Length: 165
Image 1 (cartoon, rainbow, N blue to C red):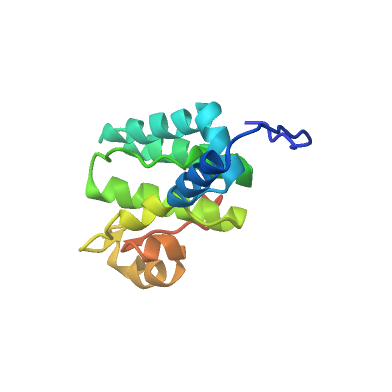
Image 2 (cartoon, rainbow, N blue to C red):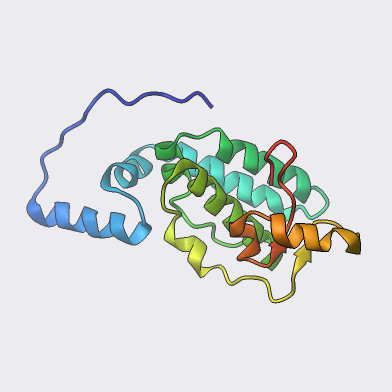
């Protein structure tokens, strides 16, 4: 996805009550006012994100779906990222997928220097640790080198090759 610079401004006249309602709704969604309104008016980024999350339902192809989601999130500018992930996925196929997706969104937000959406906090971390390798000799390495959003969710992976998670 091409990154567009934002050099135009749009002004609309609204009542103070409407402005307060928009500010409240934006704050509840964890977005600034511009990202919130853009997401309402131009939902294609959000729809793309939700479609890629939905693709994670296919357990046989989940690795490819997660890689595709990662590539999508990585391609977005900070504003586009906030717009895309503003809507919480209605449900994830598994507890693992929900945590992995939330961790990817948090990681993408960290890289873009923006706050992750509030919905990521509602995803309860895994009870049992998940290691990206079955080799016991790699566990210590994975425990110490996993990106923080993944570690916080009890997922231990290595993202050093190509930066993919």
